[in-house]
Amino acid sequence: MTSAWVYDLRGKEVVFTGAIPDYSEAELTAIAVNSLGASRVKDDVAKYSTDVLVRGYSGRWKFGSYGKKEKQVAEMQRAGHHIKIIDAEGFFGLRSSLAAPALTPNVPDAPARAKATEGGAVGAPYRAGAFSGPLQGDGEHHRDPDTMERGLKAHSSTQDKLAELIGLHGLTPLSPFDKTCNFDLAWACDDGSVGVAEVKSITEGNEAFQVRHGLGQVLDYGHRLTGRGFQPKLVLVLEAKPRDAAHWKPLCAEHGVILTWGPFFPGVF
Image (cartoon, rainbow, N blue to C red):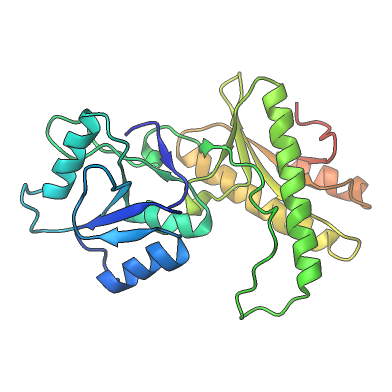
């Protein structure tokens, strides 16, 4: 697996190889273009214009475990072209703003393929401002848009400030790539452990809900990372000091979670 990542398909030319169960070619094209912003989807790989090959599944590939499109991409990469390969899981993860690992072509003279979760990667390079833009309604949910947008922007601002602090300590902030372990922020510590944080905005009316929700989430992420061989250090991050900090802080500590808050994040380092 290469160290590169695909963060989105905006303005990119995409080609699919193989099939993806439960999705037609037309549906996949619609997702790529309408949902993910691809400039176009083509049937064949073009040497100077194709940006991403999405690898599905097939029992009839020309070379058994891969087809002619993937063979062509491998040859193009060896020649220095920028084209990348992602799998179906990575493609669908892009809809949730998760980075997709760029995979090594599945050809005989290339290293063995591996999922990022199996390759020792905690996360992808951090992307700031994930929730700083205007709120887009989906036509299905009817919560107060001003309240929702305020919460998202507070979340994004708090997350970015913590990422900046992590960088100031000489560590590298990371974003998730796996929707089953969709933490807000992670970082590899010098002692070999991995910090993993869930960030929550709070108001006077939702403090208890947000803390309870965030605590459950970060415990889940820690359990999953432990199963992948990491030693997680769990952190629940609030945008500001909660009114009932005297209750929440020891409760989190009982479960091995550091409770901290912006703008200075006491206790994280």
